[in-house]
Amino acid sequence: MHKTMDLYRDRIQAGQVDPVRRWDGRNSAVLLDCNDDRVPLCVLGMEAFALGGQPAVFESGDREQLIVPVTGRWQVRISVNGTDVEFAGDRGQGPFDAWPGGCSATTIYVPRHARVVLDGKGEAVAFSAPAFADRPPACVVCDEHRPLVSRGSTVWRRDVVTLATPVDVTSNLILGETYSPPGLWSGTPLHVHDAPVPVDAQSDHEEIYYHLADVRDGAGPWGAYGGQFLFDDKGLDRAYVVGHRTAFAIPGAAHPVVAGPNCAMMYIWALASESSHPLAMMDVPEFAWLKRVGGIVDALQTDRGPTRISESRFAELTAKAELNPSQARVLRFHLEQLGFTVKGPSA
View 1 (spheres, rainbow, N blue to C red):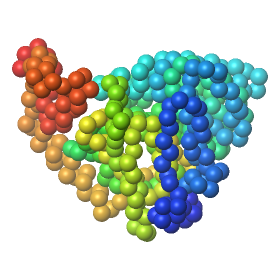
View 2: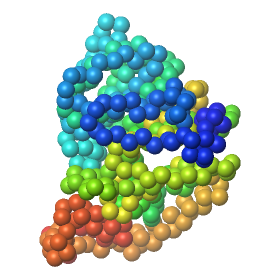
View 3: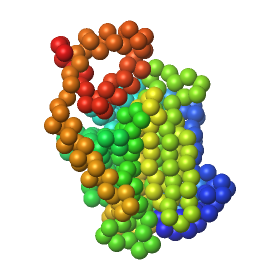
View 4: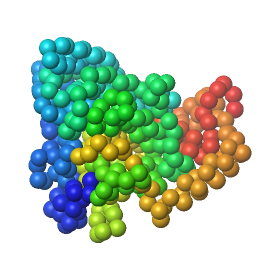
């Protein structure tokens, strides 16, 4: 938001405020508290939950929340005005189990003045913001009504699902997930949403990214990595290394992300504002032409057509190169980005 940027731009640039928070996954914790002067946010908050012990019990107060199961089994009971609503599900080993080709994204909406009991085994995160109105509890999943869609082109292609907005679920919060193949960008072309006075072309929203990496086969001591940028045309110019379980506070400005070449990454994103103006993201004019470049590349790629590699041939190649399952997945992503398809019984 414009106000948040004015408060924190110089302090972020000077290194006095760090927008990055890393979670170990072992103990539940408040990762980003908008009431903490060391966190460059004014309205958005985020908490992470390690499920498996005692249930997490809390009150929403005058804020609404969106809970996102990350891994494992979960149950949520929400009590509002003496009425209980229960939701339950299972996200297995995490968001990469179903992707690419599918999406297991789910979010649970908690209205203001509610009591919440969160239980299960695995991990979950929750985002909160001031509520502008009363809305009923809800459980929203990625399906034909909220599909996973491909956005962008060439090296900024990614898959995105929008789960909740004030149009259909919340009164303020907006939430979704973005999946990036290894080495590809998102948040590109650059866009912003921190206008001093919201207009049709740009609103005034803060944002949080919660980064996750595909580390199902282990990541080693160095871990998977990506790059998170935060910069504007008024002196802010910072870059950060992000990895598995990394929360990033975005007060405003441009905020593109790139996944490292060795691992697919995704982030859960949430936005909120101090006003009820609808979200509007303005492409930075100097970079908007990249969309036209992408259109040309996509058309030429379509004309060329895919080059098929059989599953058996792919297995031979990965075995000869001594690639483990995780490394083979990365190879598949890089081949598909070049127009190859790994599919079917014959080449």
